[in-house]
Length: 168
Length: 102
Image (cartoon, rainbow over all chains, first blue to last red):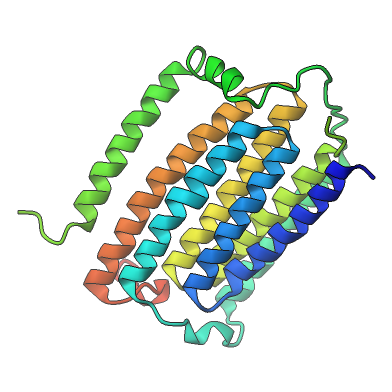
């Protein structure tokens, strides 16, 4: 059993546990903190895949920027605990859980029934670095890159317009 | 060199995607639903990065960067919607917001 596999198993168990805490906790702040933990676990999983740049921007963008935004909104709204979380399973929750179970079954069938037979090709350990990705991003994917900057601009303007109290 | 089979990554991201799905369909708090959507996006990112590394193709990692940018935009706009919803209806529980329900 290699060291990478041990790391993968630890990170996988911790990420599943913190995901369950995220969706089952009554207090939104607990959910947010365990979600930050989950994002760090994802960064560790990217490191086991040798995708260093993705791991770094996972921590920077998700655990840094997006979760600060979420926690800030929770603070602004001043929400209490969700009282009726433990109420009986109504029909909506039942159908939702059933559909989720069917979806998981489909995923497992797809993954298990037909093996992918992909073995990692040796000799290119540097394809997760920022140098390699930057070369690809600014040559082949230049137009999508510019489009995404336009999308971010639109998101900034939209968020300000939506969250403003009154438009003069 | 990594010696983990690709199926392990796919299975883990499938389980995390299902956790996010269960969060979306069972919770009432709009912010928790929002966080569950982030879990789903992240598990898809894990699949993309795993395939990108195992197939020696950088397109998966580039796509993950785009997904992260879209997720950041979605976070800003979505939380602004939640904020203005709370300002108008004094609630973030999605079953109490039924003005457009048929």
